[in-house]
Image (cartoon, rainbow, N blue to C red):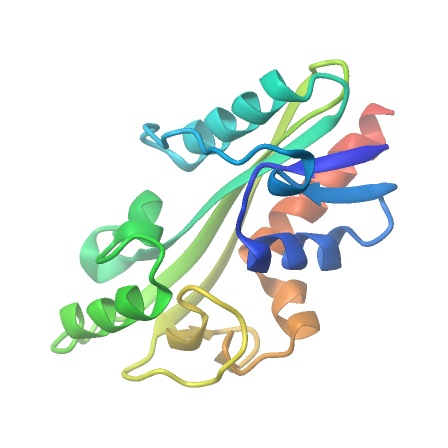
Length: 194
């Protein structure tokens, strides 16, 4: 079965391919199947935004399975922000500007606890909808560390890994990441459904 990922983000596509491995015949981005536009993320939760994206792609590619996710960094000191606005916290699509803005906002904060959260939505070729959530706990560092990953990875210190996601290998990050956990939960759900 082919799977279309409802994103144009090459980092996210690569990460999802690594996590899902050979569970699908082909894993393609929305761009690779000729969908160049995006749906406006007007939801108030990770699920609502993930569902909007999945429905948008499914309406254009009816005979394929579709996977979408909405993810974000939730910082305790900021009452869960940036959350669903993580990609546009300071400047939309500019990972470094968003990271530096976050570090600036937290410069005097003693409480730096945070977690990443992902909600994935999967719509099978017949239109049945499944969803799963994943989280990973950590804290925000005082400066960037590591060149790996994307988004906020170089400022998110993983409690489980003992290093930032930016310092972790893709395999290390995927073993404890919010997206990895959500996708693994989804795969178990799909196995039980079959």
